[in-house]
Image (cartoon, rainbow over all chains, first blue to last red; front, side, top):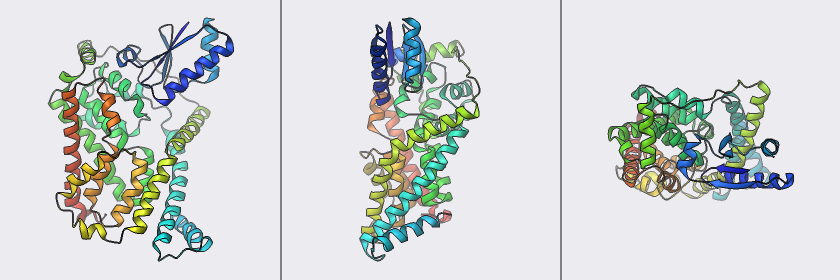
Length: 79
Length: 333
C-alpha cells in the first residue's frame, strides 16, 4: 500500500513519516511511505492543517502527528 | 495580584543569592526571576483555560464561517479568526490554498495570515502580565489593524491576478461554482476530550516556547540592568519621526516570535523608548519573517510578494507614528 504524508516538511511531518515507517516495519506490512511537499497536490486533498496522511489516494488524517494506534488501524485495515 | 512574583524575586535575588538591589547585576537577576516565574505561571493557567474554550474551533469551521461573507466584515472576521484559531505557521500554505479554493478573497485570507503570528494567547497573556491591560488592548488593536488594512489593500489591487497559476485557477473555479467545497462536520466534544485537547495544547505550546521565554527575558533583563535609566529618551529623543523607520529596519532581520520579543519590549519601554517606536520594532520582528515569505512564494508571484512586503512596512510605520502621536493621551509607555 502507498502512504502519502502531506506537509511542507516541518518537524511534525518528518515525525509522522518516521512513525508510519516504524509501525509498518513492526507489523511486517508492505508499506511505501512518500512525503508530499508539493502545495498543489496537498490542495487537491483539501488538507488545511498539516501533517496530513493519505492512504492509496484517500485522506485519512490531518492536523497532527497521528497516534500509533491510529496508524496500526490504517495499516491493518489494508493488509 | 502579581506582587507575589516580585516578593519571590526579592527573596531569591537579594535574600538567598545575597545580591545588592542597587547593583546592575542584582537588578538584572531580579528582573529575570520575577519575569520568568510570572510568565510560566500565567502561561500554564491561561493556555489550559483558553484551549478548553476553543477545543472545537478548527480551520474547517473557520473557513465555513468566512465563506461568502461581505467584504468589509470579512477582513475583520478573517483577522479576528487569525488571532484565535489554533494554527501553526508551517500550515500557512495549505491554509492559504484551502481558503482560496473555497472562494474566499485573497485579502481576507491574508488578513488571517497577517494577524495570526502577532496575536495569540501567549502574547496576550505575557503583555497583560508584564505591561498591563492598556498596552494589551493597544497591541491587539494594532495586530487586527495590520491584518485588516493589509487585506483591504491587497484586494484593492486585485491581488488574485498575481497568484501562481494553479492557485488562481482554483480561486476562479470556486467563485464561479459558488464555493463547492464539501465540509465534514465533527461530532461535538465530550468534556473529557476537551480536557485531553487542552493538556496536549499546554504541553505542545510550552514545549515550543520555553526557550524563547528564557532568551527574551534574559535579553530584557540585560537591558534592564545595564542600559541606564532614560538612555533611549536621551538618545532617541521624544520619538522623532525617523526613529520609527529605523526601528522597523532594525527589526526586519531579527526573526522572533511574540513570546521572545515581549520581555524585551518591557525593558525598552521602561528605558524610555517611545511607545510607537517600540510597537513598530515588535511588529517588524514578529510579523515579517523571511522564512514565511519564502514559503508564500509557492502560491504567489514575485510581484504580489513584493507588494505584500511594501504594504507591511508601510503599515508598521503608520502604527509607529500614530502611537507616538497618541501615547501622551494613553498614559502608557
